Length: 105
Image 1 (cartoon, rainbow, N blue to C red):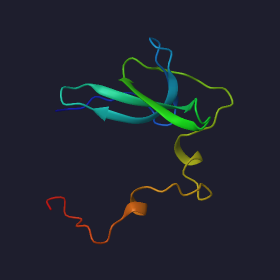
Image 2 (image 1 turned 45 degrees about the vertical axis):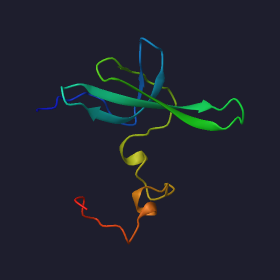
Image 3 (image 1 turned 60 degrees about the vertical axis):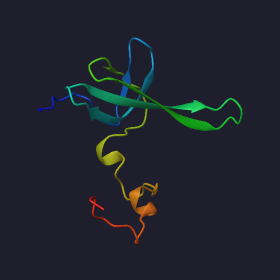
Image 4 (image 1 turned 90 degrees about the horizontal axis):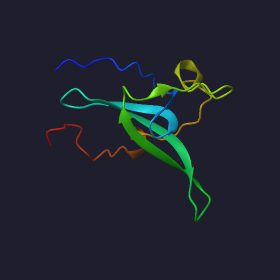
């Protein structure tokens, strides 16, 4: 199956005009029958603790529109990938030397 381009740039801000949800594009997924979905993520506040916790919602990629935020952070390209950026974890933090790297096991 050939996948179409979505025109979505990860790290940019998009708005869903139907729900009004605004968030940063953090992933694009392609489904078996050609549907491309984009995950938009924003911060929500827990009513009990007041802590900020991420809220993410998936939308059809054709449905979301680019939403420019004046003075917002640049989350695309070189601005994020600097040596001064903090290490946030990831797969290597959970590396288990006793676990097989062969996906067939």
